Amino acid sequence: MFEKLRQAMQQHEIQVLWVSNPANVRYLSNFSTPKDGKVLVTLEDAFLITDDRYLVQAKLESKIPVKMARFEAVLEFVHEIVRGRPLGFEADDTSYKQFDALRSLNAPLRPVENLVDNLRAVKTPLELTKIREAARLNDLALERVLPKIVPGAVERDIALEIEIEMRRAGADGCAFEITVASGERSAMPHGGASGKVIGDNELVTVDMGANYQGYLSDMTRTYATGNPNEELKNIHRIVAKAHQAALEKVRAGVKAFDVDFAARDVIAKAGYGEYFGHSVGHGVGLDIHEQPSVSYRNEDNKLEAGMVITIEPGIYLPEKGGVRIEDLVLVTENGFEFLSHAPRNSV
Ligand code: ZN
Ligand code: ZN
Image (cartoon, rainbow, N blue to C red; front, side, top):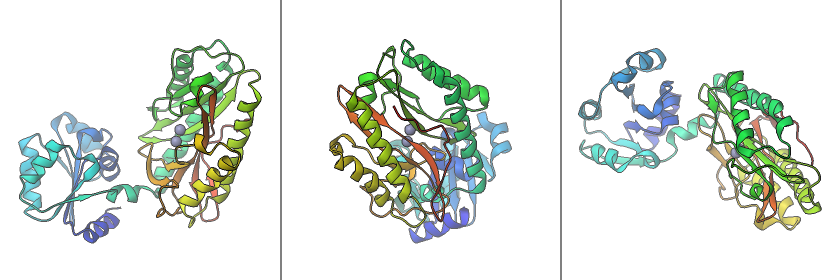
């Protein structure tokens, strides 16, 4: 990965790169508390910089040399390495304070975007093993908690039960705040889980993911309690059709843009276009939303074999309810492979 990164650095006329995005720090170093670390990459070397709280952990985990330093000592070390050479920094992940410190180094500063992130889009076999496990833990937790999603249950309790089952089965935690959104609340794509009691004849959207050794999974199912009204059943059918249409497009070489449009077309033709605002999917790995973006807004992205993406169309009707169906898939040369296996239901 460093070879590719250094090629990208040279294309951007950067000789040293200051990496502060935690997922990127973890990717390059393997350090599992990356929010307290930085990585400095030159055309010859790479260092993990952290402080003495991580003396044992960093040396144990890091696959690149570790520099223990705090505050001014960090800057001194970076100064020594940079020696006035063009220095890249991650525009989206550099605080003003950090920027100010970098500016004091007297080196040409070059903001970069997605330099390391783009490398992360295609997964290594080891990364895939971890994502598969995160997806398996997710499926298992849902299977165990599904019988409890009934009228009278509290959304927050369901979310808690899912987290407990994931952790019990070996997850390091949730990939993100679990959503259990019932009734009108299901119209909120990322509604979280509230104190609401699940009622009769409601849609219940469950969006969940597990964290396994830093790698994440992501999946959504929308269930019904009892017999919801015709409109709600209908939007579930439409979303399922849109989901299928998008999946049929997925394979190496296609534009991510076309995958999004396949789903969007189905929903628009059914008359619900304005109720599907978000993009159809995103990459998943060390971050829950990472490259590639599978969006109609992005014309440049092409899918490649080894990318892990979600396919998640939805329809959200204010004050009525909403449906999203999301699967995690691995892009292959000829199509895709499901990483999430929880049964796709109808309502
Ligand atoms: Zn999700
Ligand atoms: Zn997602």
